Image 1 (cartoon, rainbow, N blue to C red):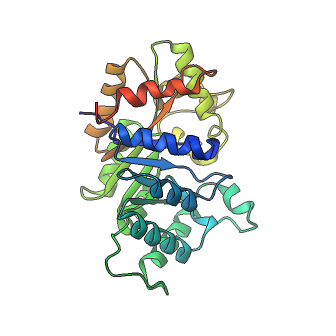
Image 2 (image 1 turned 90 degrees about the horizontal axis):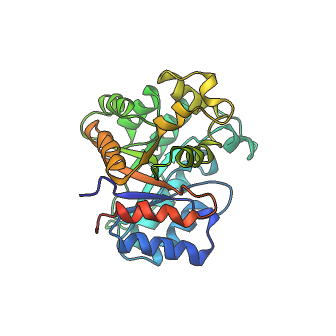
Image 3 (image 1 turned 30 degrees about the vertical axis):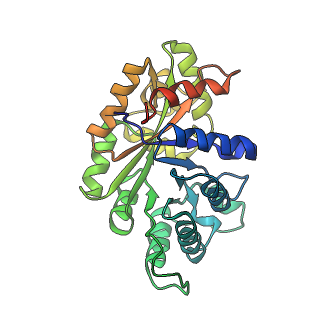
Length: 291
């Protein structure tokens, strides 16, 4: 049995045809879910709807749609519409993202926990939206790393989406969420025994996160220092947050997350060859639930 049920996809970097081929390939391999990012390209809910319209069984999740981009009514409306039109195959992941998400819109950055709590409370409250009574419920997950945000997820959502985790931090997250909430863990993984290739792939993936204070706080809680996230990231940092090795080694490390309380592992497969992005499929296919 595969320890992985979902795959993260950088949809913005694919052409429409490539994106559909990617989604259908994941579907054929038996993956339960495909997650897409909210960056600065395509609108994430529109993209999710397009994928859902051209697939049959795979669920599509927003990982994550940031809340500065839409008010709470728009988020509720998007989720219910996509759930209705897809027969319940939509998953909603929300988060505050980072200050750039608010700054680019000219909106003041607020305390992340306060902002998220108010936003989810409004989503769970009365809205002017009128939907059919048979619309399937939408799973709602909150991007959370620290204990305060995990507490918000436990109180107001169906669970949490996490990133840059260790099995030890998953165990802590599970204790905060309680036994009945979902804990979805995104894990960077690279199928190679070449340490240099794996670490280079890991550094490419981590490069956009290294200067972000939110992730630095996560790493600091795990015993890392500024020296670890400076100059491209230390080997120790990369080896902690990027799972690499042969297939058995990767399976063992992924299983550790499940044993620590993760509900679902979302795979972010990295290519060990910067000149061959398609090599990431070797891991996706090797871990496919249908295999």
